[in-house]
Amino acid sequence: MCELLGMSFNHPVNITVSFRGMIKRGNNNPHGWGLAFYPEDSKASQIIKEPVQAGRSPVTSFLVNYKGIHSSLYISHVRWATSEVNYANTHPFVRELQGRDYVFAHNGNLHDFRSALPLGRYIPLGTTDSEHAFCYLMDYIANEISQWDYQAFVQFEEVLRKVNELGKFNCLLSDGEYLFCYRDKAAPVGLFYTLRKAPFGVVKLKDEDLDIDLDAMKRADEVGCIVATNKLTEGEDWKPIERGQLMVFHRGKQVYPGTTEISKETMLRALRFIRTSPSRVDVLAIANNVGIEINLIAPLIDKLVQAGYIRQDSRDSGGPYEFNSTYYTVPSKRKEIDKMLECKINAGEE
Image (cartoon, rainbow, N blue to C red; front, top):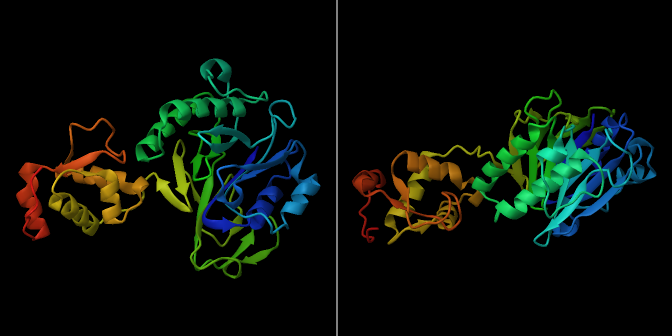
């Protein structure tokens, strides 16, 4: 069984603790290991990998103690091979799109993937099902995703499920900004995640008698998430990603699926902004006014639309959550909205 590790933080961090735990758990995987990260949060990734057992590599022995690597995003993989063991077949894999490196690692195996997943621009260098699937996903992103937003995450989740139909498919993907984590729809091997924020406390590596005081290592404003095939520590709240689900993290925060409960206060603030605007307002302006991250705006829009309070302008060419999609209050609901807001509206009507 391969081991996956992904990390997303709001500040550059060192990987020694989590990498040490992951390498320890992957000692039974003799066919290679790899680490991808984005130095100084650049758009270019750095890949360190070898087609050798991680526990016997002098490079991993160096990295678990080296404090000189810092990044806000990491993907690592320890391999149990189902195809030829060589450098080209060792994860993570990397491809460039629009001036940004995407990196990918996979746990599982796919059947009939060459016929089921036709390729275009991106071509594998090795012979693995994993790299083939990655190239297929990159073709999809290049052709179908213009920007990463909530609707794009929904679309991409469906594509991952399509690939999953061919076999076992746990995977991690990143463009240096977002960490995409998909768990197989049926396989018993899962993906777990834990969120870190102050106070951090003391954790213990599960496979080693070592206690680590995270408070002594972390900044007070640091937040992040760690995703792994197996729980790496004791003393932290590890939760499973649901089967067949994509989770997306950005700068240490979960942005998909939306988990933020939309409060009445937030709804009223959004309604006040839309209602008092002299004309229709776009999604980005709503998010900025309410103080919600743009990638978390979809649940708020959905709730207001389902309640019948707002409507997307028919002149829009984009989907409901695109940054420039526009909304206005439904005319028949304006008196009800005004009563809710308890204010006089002097703005022009849409």
